[in-house]
Length: 340
Image 1 (tube, helix red, strand yellow):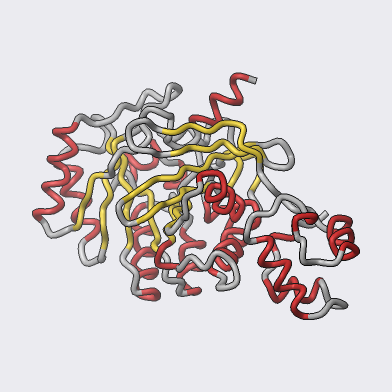
Image 2 (cartoon, rainbow, N blue to C red):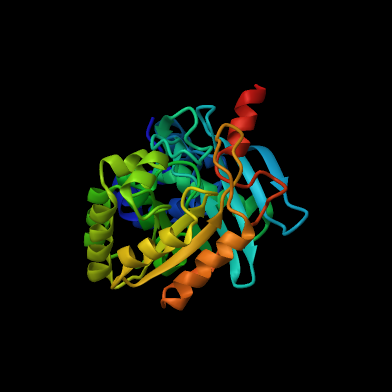
């Protein structure tokens, strides 16, 4: 049975071809309000509601874990999907509005050494509607409106390219949640062909590239994707992306003790980024029990930041949110699975 929430408004009109045109708009509006059953669509005829229930799957995740930080109000959800699989979503509160970090896959195939999401590999890809559900039901459960989205949870968004692009179309829809592209960030570990394909769409979202090292030897050790698309090839794709979209690239850089946090590494990073409008986001590494990698100390992080800023590169240290609730990607799902 196909998922009805994957449909755009125009596709829904086609699917309901024998109905008056306004019926599709009614159904679409209900779907993007986060109804859990067709019976809740009270302005539709009963016969149409029954027909929809027979022909279409209406997804609605169930929260099996909800953790709220006492430190900063960050809320982390573990949602159970219709097939029993689980994904994580995080609601983060900032002065400029609320940001929801969503997952794009159940598990992850990329194998990055510092990430809990990839332990156990990829189970399956999320549909566009399931990604939309993460935003919708986080709003509904928390009672907080969402103004910004980051695709930075479990999974590699560009490994699920078609579904992610459809999700972006749905969440940007004026008849739906109407969240603007400039309020959306998409994070990738560096699948070069998909970066180039995304550039052709000229979407005005922010591309966040998980770089984490400026040299192939180091990056290949912690990120297997680098063996397929090495640093120079990745950065060439980033330059092409900027030329096509005019959007500055954000580079995510996890600070790992004695691996990528030396002054020499900072200088090499500056050399690699020369001429590319970029923002570097230094991320204090999260401890993952299964990984031997450890976070850099604060002095090393600040020294690294200072070297970049003195050379004219915009650089911030990511604020740590939800440190008391396992808010880093994959940890809540992993603990839930281990407890079953």
